[in-house]
Length: 178
Image 1 (cartoon, rainbow, N blue to C red):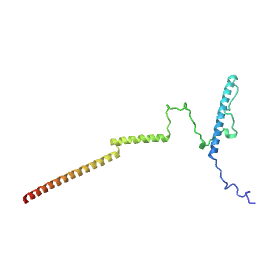
Image 2 (tube, rainbow, N blue to C red):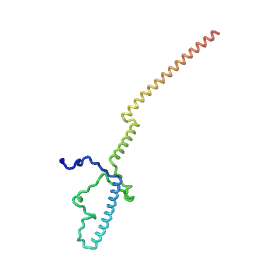
Image 3 (cartoon, helix red, strand yellow):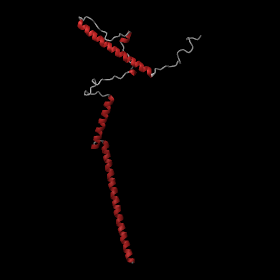
Image 4 (cartoon, helix red, strand yellow):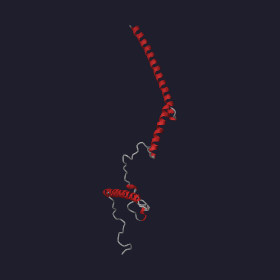
């Protein structure tokens, strides 16, 4: 018989995964258990307050929960961050008028939008370097267009003048022939 016992060992076994239905069932059971603990805790606290009123107050009540945890479970609370249930708030608990705490991303997004608005105002006023460069470029383009328009107008006038001279010369030739 080979060393290590059975052939194959633990390696290569088929892995099993928890189905979503099982996870949902476990979460429901956990919620129900917490509700029962809260109800029992409230009932225990009510009984303790009544006992304190009726008795002389010599009793010590350190256990607030209904069950004590064994070992180090009472010292360390472990919660799976992947199974955090969303807490629902009642309408009375929601604070609409209070200051809203923004997350870092929301604050950065708002600051970015404000900076963009400030830049656009300065750009429209012509105070940014890019706006100055754009205005200078536009001035150069306007001058070029004005010069091109003047040249076109001069050429048109010259054509008109030459056409008039040619027409006048043609008119004289036609008169002389007749």
